[in-house]
Structures are given as structure tokens and as C-alpha cells.
Image 1 (cartoon, helix red, strand yellow):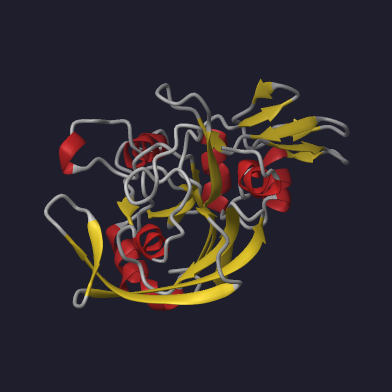
Image 2 (cartoon, helix red, strand yellow):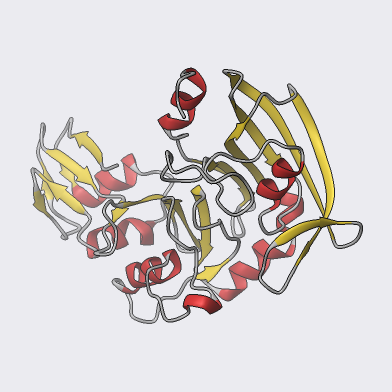
Length: 289
């Protein structure tokens, strides 16, 4: 969603942006201007020294438009080290071996976006979200930053998801399993493998479906989906591990909060994505199929 601000006094545009976008670096503010993401009274402005007048309307774009998508991709946060995106459901984080020639993935779209400023700019995968999972995802802007973040990712990154599952769950529970993958990249519970720990808390239920707040203490492929399915509460719309349901166009799993230690400043920083309204609608209504 674009940010709209009404100017309350005459001042230089760059100074105005630095004041209103205090969380962004100087280079990041300059980047917004270079990328033509600032409008004043519905006209794109790229000059740092443009003089704003009282009651001018400044619009700051924080989204990316890709021709393959029916909607825009929202940038939650960006600085010279990282970029944080509000990922839509239905798009891969990065192309897989099965579709490695497919440019319709988030990595490709964000790569093109950062290259608008400088053709040498790159992004690097830090973590992933499943294709049908929506919400907060972070990319690094250098391999050094990627390595810093990944080194202690499971220990330092706080990740909160929301999921709508089939049935009425316990009020809260901790799921501890060992997970393995087969050659088809299907994850399954085993007596050996990688340890996966998932905590959940029930937020609301209508008896047929329940809305859960889920916190993961490890980052295994399809962890939440497999572990919830294992206790007979599969995620609604999960066609791989759950029950196929043609009434829902997406899987009801959303990465709502990501909290990290910033790799440069060392400060704790939290990023959030609003829980889709359909999650609440499903557990509010009892007649949804």
C-alpha cells in the first residue's frame, strides 16, 4: 500500500523524506527518488532539492508491479543490506529444478527491482516460504549479509505464522518430530532425521475449523504443514499434505511476523504482515464448505 503524506510546511523534498522515513538510510531515500517511487501532487519527482509547499501531497510508493502478477508486491522494509517483502500466496520463492526456466518467482522479480538502480545489484536467499504460503520474507543484498543472517538463523530469528486448520485443536501444544525428505521432496515424519519443533496456540474456532498462532523453533521444509497434518489437523487448502478442497483458492498459512537481529546495526527489528481477512472469516462462519 502506498504511503500518503500531506506537507505541513515548506521544505526540500529530500529533507522531508528523511524526516518522515526515519527508519531508512540516506542511500535508501535517494534510491526511492532514483527509482521514480515518489510523487508530489500525482507527478513523479526525482530531484532531491525539489521544494515542497504547504498542503502538497507526497505519495511514497512501496510496491513492485510485475506483469505476471494480478496484484502488486508490497515492500515492507528496505535498506542497503536487506529487503523485506510481503509475499503473495501462489508464487514460488525461487525457481525449483522442476521449473528452473520459469522466471515467475519472487527471487526473479525482486532481482529485477534492485537492478533498476544499478545493474550490478543482487539479492540472496536467506530463507524460503512455500509457494502457497503468504507473508513476510527477507532477502539479503550481499553474500556477506546472507551468511551473517543464516549463521544463527534458527537461534535468532523469531517467526510467527497463522494457520487455519481442519477441526478443533487443543488450546495449545508443542509438536516435536524428526523429519526426512524423499526423492520427490515430500517431507515425512521419521524416527531419525532433522529435529522440528513447532508451538501453536488456538486463537478461535467454530468447531469445524480453527485459527492457530504458530511459532517455529526450527526451519525445516514444510514443517508446519507436516506436523499439523500428523495430529489430524491439516492446514485448510493444503493439497500436498492435507485434504484437497476446491472451495479455497489458496492454502491458509501466513507468515505474519519476522523478528531478526539486523546484520549491520545489531538492533532487533520486527517486520509484520497483516493476517488475511479470509482466515477470520472461515472460523467465524459455520457454513463454509
